[in-house]
Image 1 (tube, rainbow, N blue to C red):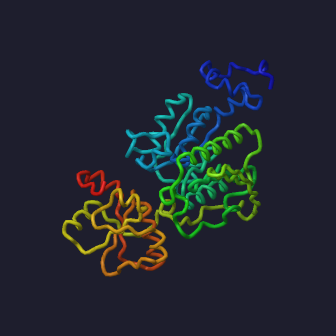
Image 2: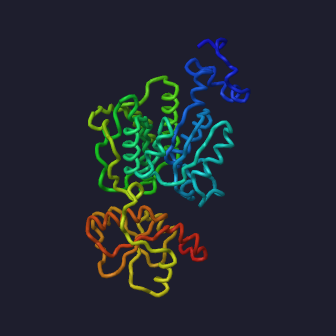
Image 3: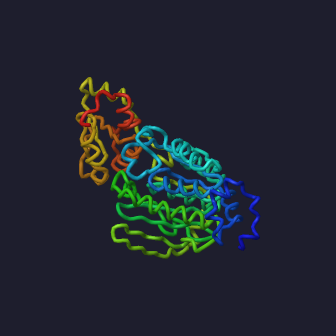
Length: 377
């Protein structure tokens, strides 16, 4: 569009100055910037992927941005989740992100959803937005997002990480392939996607997140060629880029209702007994006969652990390479109590243990309340 023919009065002086480099682009201009301003984007997860997505969409002037995240900022997040700093530790990620993004661009309306995305609330939350961005790190939530987007007929921009590699794709866009066309069923075993389980180079989430934000803006502006039906693979060690095609399967484009997602974050129907940090403290002081299993990685365990706990990996537990005792209580622990609860549920379902318990609130809760007993820090 010829720049002289555009109606600049539709944007404020601040917006004209702020988005001047957008306006100069033939494929954006004033009308494109107005379209960006009217758009509504939901970002699920404000971690390694979510931080760059949120920063660039906010800077670009997306008018309405929702953030879904129930997690707290942890020191292990800081090497890659660049919205957060030392002063933000133990604060809700979504709320901290919203505060900082509002300072970046006061023209953007940011709504915080400071809770888990579950099958009970997904349809309601997603219905208020036009584009959904998946910045999560687990299969159950990705499948939940996909199915909700299919039901609501909304596109979602997918991202995933693994050590030095990343993936970006666009699903359910203009009747295109869905996530289930790529992976039909949720893998049974947990782990694998989480950075807390396998690690990730700090820059990789930033690169993948930027590509996700790029796909969002392309969809909003209806420019370029989206990654719909294609998956971009990036190897940051070799600087190799590959694209694989995803064939559409019509049976996965006709989902009418949400299904079963094998994770407490989505189903909230687990029946594992919970033990509080105070109850566990009493057990320890009374020298009760029980076992504490810490399922975090070895480096985290060495950094800090509860006295007399043992460090057993998730894989060993699920493959029964470590035989659990059945004659005394077994308490599983992790940082926040979510992953350990999930593992306990899978162990109960798979091997029918009746003596499993989960530390409610996890080690973060323990440290916050028993700060004077930070053993092995």
